[in-house]
Image 1 (cartoon, one colour):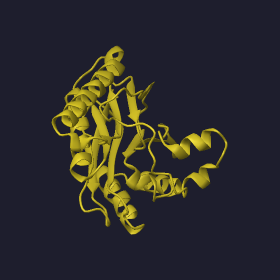
Image 2 (image 1 turned 90 degrees about the vertical axis):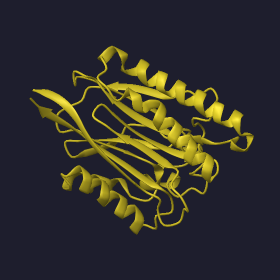
Image 3 (image 1 turned 120 degrees about the vertical axis):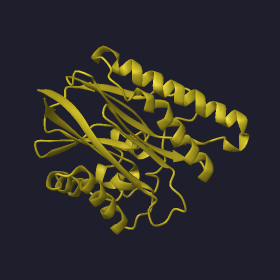
Image 4 (image 1 turned 30 degrees about the vertical axis):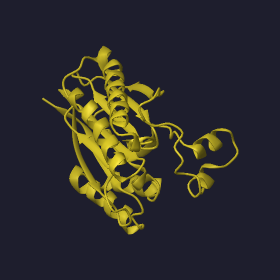
Length: 242
């Protein structure tokens, strides 16, 4: 028996925004979410550039090469965003978050790359854990003990991102983990995590066995909460197969 990754993704522009600046990839080896920023056309372009840069990593990769592969994908995204700004100076300031998970061909390891405030959660044995750390001003205040996590969720500057892919030097966070059969991963843009409580996420991830239905249910909850932003969800299950 070998561990496999089975994923599905869904996205909605929400109820307020005129367009959708999010992008996603849901594959057999790679899942990723990107949330663009910096004006309508530019944000949309930045997130698509990021997903197009890491998308080719969706293939069988040996364990030892996972982080290096993600690093190369992010470097490519950075270069392409820089080129896009050079071609049109009005795109200056555009950028995107990126949260990506790459599964090893053996199923024995996975690697995670993260920059910005999209998130990766691991739902394992009924417990939900946020694996990524937000690159935001309010997270910095939480880390410093200035405000509590509860205060951060309603802070007026919670949308201020301290790091994103913008064509410049960036310091993504990388991590490797050992997957287990039954693990369920949730990757999402802040259009979900800012409006749906962690306990509700936990409940839906545990109750909705069907990946597609689970993704649709989470998006529906974000819309019911006002849908103030684009909302993107990828559900990826670790399954044991012959």
